[in-house]
Image 1 (tube, one colour):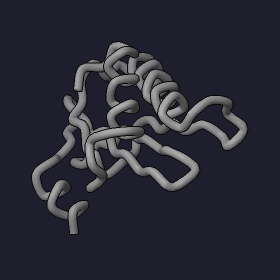
Image 2 (image 1 turned 90 degrees about the vertical axis):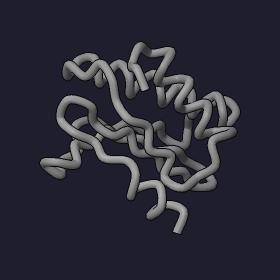
Image 3 (image 1 turned 30 degrees about the vertical axis):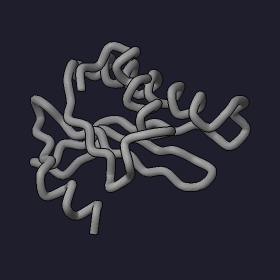
Image 4 (image 1 turned 90 degrees about the horizontal axis):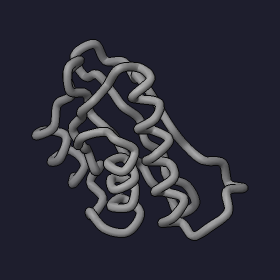
Length: 104
């Protein structure tokens, strides 16, 4: 229900796509989506062999996603936390995206 409530308010366009976050107990996945065309532009994840705490790994994923977005030509996006609370790994991911140079 939380995810539906967030998605009702957040819409990504080709000029400002949506950064979607999914986290499980082991992994964090992020992707940049254009909702108008219904296509994933860029995605990022780290395999389970990544060293470090979960929060540190999430920050690395954010930086990797921002680098890939720059290569494609995306400068700003809308952050979709996917119904998860904005703390811990979700916040670290967002901070990593900002550190990588993407405006959210």
